[in-house]
Image (tube, rainbow over all chains, first blue to last red; front, top):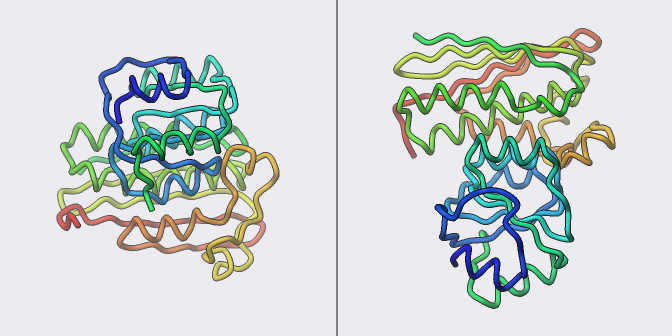
Length: 113
Length: 141
């Protein structure tokens, strides 16, 4: 799934990042970073309502290139700065986790498991 | 042999992950396989978060040779009273603040074990904990 279609489907905005990581194959939705760190999946979209600096650190360590913040959670300036340094794209949608996942799943984004 | 050492501040979640991030940068420069790097830095980051979450202060020492990477995380802190219990998925003594950061679900130590080849915990209640980990660099799964 392309970043562009994710943005359209979810009425999402790009908080920071460029469009160079255009494709994701799987999605994983969790507010628990420990669960994200147990995955070994490439080209994965992280869907989360946990918006703090450790969300970005987790993505950095787990080689996640795109984070989608749901429920209108705001990225702090520190998060944006770290995302820029580590080349991570942050998207934000006002939709709930459930609605977000339902839409992405129905449009073909695969689950990790 | 590349040697690295970083200080880790207990309780400061703004800085948690800084040391692991530095190590990741070095491993990339050394052209180590990306999948191995991920396993190493995930284990290091979990261990670093543990120190920030539970201890007063700590250090991360890294020794990289062509064959393996040895990692020693040492802290001054409460120690672990029951290591066997701490190794169980789902067991945690983390505070509410730690949980709000997306951790403290009792996944850290099991995940460290999964991502490393050797793991050893030495702990003394009321004094601190030393975690030793090794990852061999020649066996890419």
